[in-house]
Structures are given as C-alpha cells and as structure tokens.
Length: 104
Image (cartoon, rainbow, N blue to C red; front, side, top):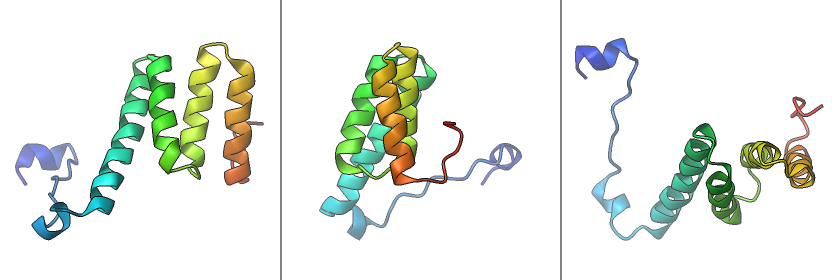
C-alpha cells in the first residue's frame, strides 16, 4: 500500500480467489445484489429518488430482510412526498429490526 493510501485510510481492494470467481453463481449473485444496494444508495445521495427506489426494489427482491434498505427506500419515498409508501417501508424496517428507534 502506498503512502497516499495509508494517509486516507484506503483499504486496497482484493479480488476473490480465481476458483471463487469462476462459475460461482452464489458469488456472482451476491455481487449483483450488492451492486443494486450500492447504486440505490448512490442515487439517493444524488437525489435521484425514483432511480434509488427502483434499485432498492431490485435489491430487496433478494435481500428482503434488510432493514437498512427499507429505511433508505422509505427516505426516498418521503422525499417524493409518497408518505404512505414511506411509512410502509419504515414499518417493514422496524418489523425486521425492532431496535430501530430513529423512526419515532
């Protein structure tokens, strides 16, 4: 790791072992769904709320027990003034993780 990376606390990316990458559908599906979450969050940060919701929907088809995704999707819904849908997302997030208390 070079000195610039150390200063910025950058962790070098390591590619998975070739045996894992080649033909491992679980790895490939995991990567694909994680990309949906990453894209959805990026769209949220760029205030592209419709795109964010679409990406969260794709992600939640596979990871339907992710309270954080429902939380972020609810936020995007609220920004679009779709308040009932936002409440439904927040309710689902709390159902999955009752310890979430920032909704109250």
